[in-house]
Amino acid sequence: MPGVCDPLLSTERATAMVTAGVWRDELLTDLLDALADRSPNRLAVADHNSMSGVATRLSCLQLQHRVDRIALGLVGLGVQPGDVVAFQLPNWWQFIALHLACLRIGAVSNPLMPIFRERELGFMLDFARARVLVIPHRFRGHDYPAMIAGLRSALPALEHVLVVGGDGPDGFERTLLETRWEDDLDRDAEFGRRRPDPNDVIQLLYTSGTTGQPKGVMHTSNTLLAGVRAYADGIGLSGADVCFMASPLAHQTGFMYGLMLPLVLGTHVILQDVWDPVQAWKTIQSERVTFSMGATPFLADLVNAPNAPAPADCHLRQFVCAGAPIPRVLVQNATEKLGLGVIAAWGMSECGVVTMTRPDDAPDTVFGSDGRALHGMAVRVIDDAGQVAPAGTEGRLQTQGSCLFVGYLKRPDAHGVAPDGWFDTGDLARMDADGYIRITGRAKDIIIRGGENIPVAEVEELLYRHPAVQDAAIVAMPDARLGERACAFVTLKPGAALDFNTLTDWLRRSGLARTYWPERLERVDELPRTASGKIQKFALREQARTFGDAPAFSAPAAPDAR
Image 1 (cartoon, rainbow, N blue to C red):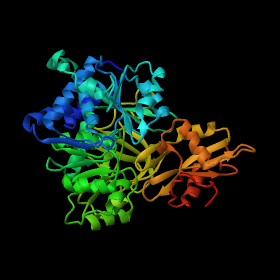
Image 2: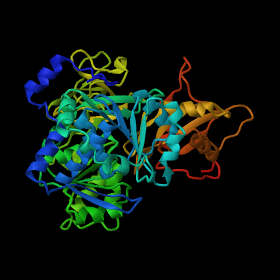
Image 3: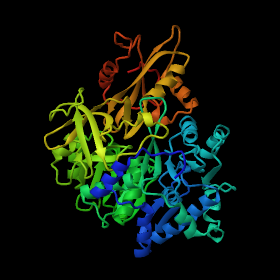
Image 4: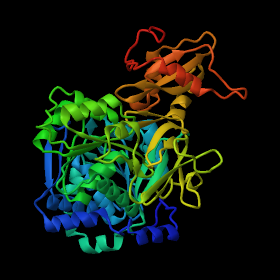
């Protein structure tokens, strides 16, 4: 379909995937419609809006009706097949309904993390030429309409901004739900002619990279559904399971395994919009949740929560942990304290989860590896010469297969997929003789804080703009809960001064998301460099390791105070 998202997908790949049976040429809305016909009163999604205090429970039929009206509303607003519809929403039912509505009419869903602020949004919305943006009125104290109002003049393609919980003419509810669009539009005709091909781009998800600009990962129905099905089969999930998702739906974890997975399984999902482990356990137990997924900090918080249930009482059966290494003691505690099965996984926005341990793997495998490839996917480790590395040898990790993405938005040069289909992930890994991998490092200069990538180059660029900073480098320092935090090493200009509060105030005024801010400042006389002048970040990382599990500095007296 026409639009800004042109997939890099060869006929040969598509044919091979269909022949192999891993691409079924179906849409997620097909699964919703089948559920609404078969089990109209079965629960589909339940959420609790922490800002309004309103809890919503939608059956399959109710969700279908809301999806259809929202889809017709988007048609009424002029959205065409291939147009980008962006939504910056927490884990609320509206997020799920919006994606399904976009899918109904061939529009491209562009989920945006709620933490993004002016700097990220200004680029992302303009780059994708988003025509519609849906935002909350307020979330966690932030005024989203005011933020977007300050950006509108720089976004000529953005025609409509709709506000969930808004009481004005731009209110999401008033515009898309309360208006009977079906009275003026032929539902079947509109949906029939706008139905996307399973190989059309349906999702645009920005991911952080080594440059100052994030890349827009493009996925199709076939690539996403293949990954979700392989995931479910790999750990034995079924329609008898109940899903709980506290990871953001705007992250690939939440999107694929909180939004899509329940519909694939024919079950329902319970959403949490603000992470609170005590409330999470109340929800898990009352809703009889059996499955969840999140980064290591989520699991650590559940294990240590004061109201964690005893193994005999715990309904939660499996937790898939990804985004950071899993400490041995955490797996042991989860097993002994909760009777919980922990699954280790590795993946990327570009391909979803690619490798996982299996439920019958030994605990040593879970905390000592990142699993083996799922059905339809393959991984390999290659050396500097491009040859497959011997078992146990570190090298560059590559992957190929059914759930691999179909390119970066407007960046065909950055695709990174060789003619033979192998994609260079940018990660370093080892593989054992049984095909289990262990991520050992990253060729990409990214810090992963609690499963969220920090775009190092972008933050460094802002540091360099500070009038006191001569040189700057950001590296990871270890943290028991989040896996990694960001530490900024800086040298200052002669006579200049800089403390941590001044630094964070600078980043705040620059519009950078708080999650991306460094959480430690180290002033040094000079940064270690190679003979050619490049900063030796490995030396800084080694120094940062000595800081141990350094706490986040919210308001330190002085950066040098230990």
